Image 1 (cartoon, rainbow, N blue to C red):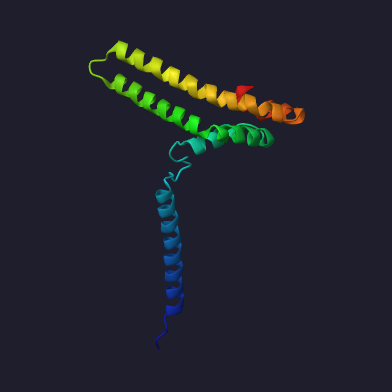
Image 2: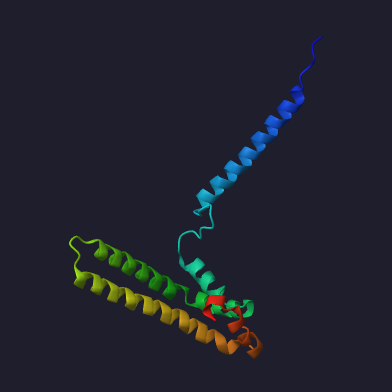
Amino acid sequence: MTSRRPHGLVYLLLVVSLAVNLVAAGYLGYIAYAGYKVKGGKGPRNIENTIEFIANKYPKAVGDKVRARLLDRKFELSQALDELKVARRASRRAMREDPVNKEHVETAFAALRDKAENFQKLVHGAIVDALPDLPEADRDEIDKGADADEK
């Protein structure tokens, strides 16, 4: 007496396994194509995600106004961010010199501080410009949105 093996069930399991693998491969491919890391990566730093990062530090109503003011200055902010990136690379190059030249490193750090200060002035200026457009109730929410470690 011969028993018939359940071929249909085996084929169904193979098809389901293949589908799951294709979905997983597609997801990983999309993540890689989009430039994001699988484990919570933010992608490359650019002016758009920098503006979002800044605006998201505030409660929604405040963040929306800040975002609008930052977008008004997007060109200036983009230039300042690019200059900041160049200064960061220059400081890292100076630190890698062999032998270490303290004057080069200090000069590179001074330039980096100047570029960072310029970028911060633009960001802070946009925030200051957004405040008068906000009702007092929205401004009162600003401190409530601060991270726990800032309090």
